[in-house]
Length: 472
Image 1 (tube, one colour):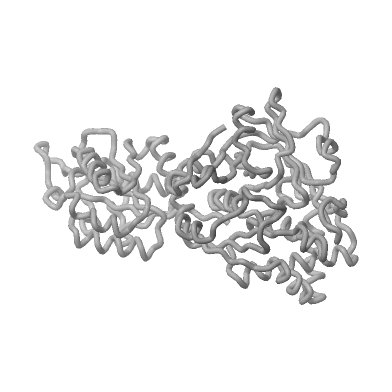
Image 2: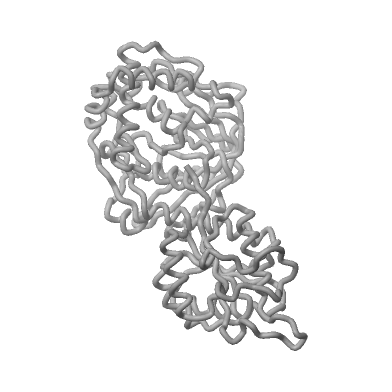
């Protein structure tokens, strides 16, 4: 589940300016403004780490320049920057925000910023008070000169656009940080010759920092058969309380419940952060499809992809880091170009939370689509609401992310019947963008949607991850 983005906040200043007063006998640097900026960031949901865990100004802040400030937390020397950097690393921040109340000596900070190796935001206000912007321009040029990527923002602490830009960037930085500590579990290998879903483990480790844990599907069966009577009964009742209809606990349903118990247990035992399960045809022919367990895990916020599909799993995991909203993976069955409508159907799994009520879903016996062992399918139609589409793909050696926006609506006529499989998870979405471009940028049968507006966050995350965003 999501957490707040965590950012370090440091106020930089040249040592000769810390206690300097201007010709009007005012404190020169805008330390009051620095404190206002920090408090504004906390109000919009950023978890700030302050140097020495101490505020720049205590109590009320009435002006940009203040008489009383805590000078020990102003980073005005190389030694302080080294200590501040060590604190930020220990705190596990996602990015570092540097505020400039006036000029500073850039050589006090550059080596520490190189060592920190995290996304950086440079910020000062859009007024002349304290001559604050000369520090911003100076550091901006310095970091460009030595090749340190960073984001420059310019505006006052009550500027909604500036705050939104910083929030988007810190969320993207959070994605990069979380990915670098994550592990994908892959139960099985290539599914149905889906080349667009394949990954290179070493490449993912070097590019995103993601470890891969490969586990055979048979491991799921072994653990499923170990499930106790009590575990089965408890899990069955949990599933039953989540939907309006569920088959009795017969032999087929029991296998589904056992698979859910096993899947959940292995995720925990192997410290897996997100995964994919190859069902066809080893599981679906010889035991059961894993759809019920995947539905339940998805409903609980865990990302698990159909068909062991890692690029889709990664796309959804990035969405999950950013948002707690329901995420749906499904085939794009058709795009009505004239009406700008996308219709998506899943072969069996979806989070129950895509339904418009807590009991919208029904688990039904699965039609014999793929696999001889039989299975159970979630019958559900996605609730109305604005959504963001996304999908990571590769074009030769280049990673791209297809991003679109739309709105799910209730179909007057249930178009699932046209597929021949009317009991599967389904969504109809009115596209905001160009349907022709949407079609041209589909590089897999799968697309992934989240009930949240994540377009700006995804674009910013792509910049930090070295992925080219493609908007349609």
